[in-house]
Length: 217
Image 1 (tube, rainbow, N blue to C red):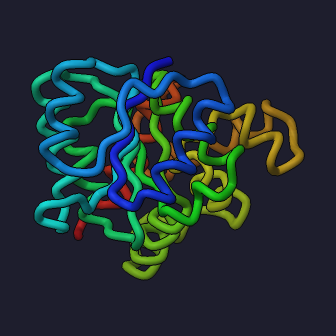
Image 2: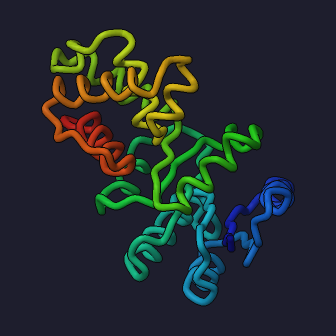
C-alpha cells in the first residue's frame, strides 16, 4: 500500500516513515510543505495520504486544504489528517462531502503504533477514523442540549462513542467484552432513539452519527 506522508518536523516525519515501513507500507513520498504535498498527491496517486494539518509556508491549515483539494480532484482519495489540538472544524471539513476514506487523529495517537496503523488501514479501505477526543467533545455538547442523546443508556453512549470513531460491531464487542449480537441490538436502539436510518454499512453509520452529533454547531 503506497503512502504519501506530509509532516514538516523532521524527527516526526522520519519516525512515521519508519513505523509505516515496519508495517509493510510503501512510502511513495515524505514531504514537508504544502506545495510539495500537492505535487506528490497529483503525480504519485497514492493509496492513502497521511497529512499534518499545519504545513509551510503558511503554517495554518495548509496541509488540510491541500488534502481537501486533492480529494476534489480525485474523489474518494483516502486522507488521514494529524493535528496537534482538537479542532472540530477540521473534522467537519473532512466529512463535508459525505464520503468515507477520511480520518482525523491527534498527533499523540501516533505514538501508539497499533492505534495509528489501524487508523491508516481503515481510512485506506474507505472507512472513517475519528479521534476519540473529537467524539467526546461532540457528545458532551449534544448531551447538554436536552435532545434525544439524553435518552441513551450509559452502555448505548459507550457504543455510540466507539461507533462514531469508526469501529465495527465486532471491534466494539471485543473492546466491551460482550457479544456481537448484543452490540447489534445496542446500535439498532441508538439509531431508533436518534431518528437515524439503520445501516449495516460501517462507514455510512459513522457518517450518520457524526452528522447528528455535529448538528446545531
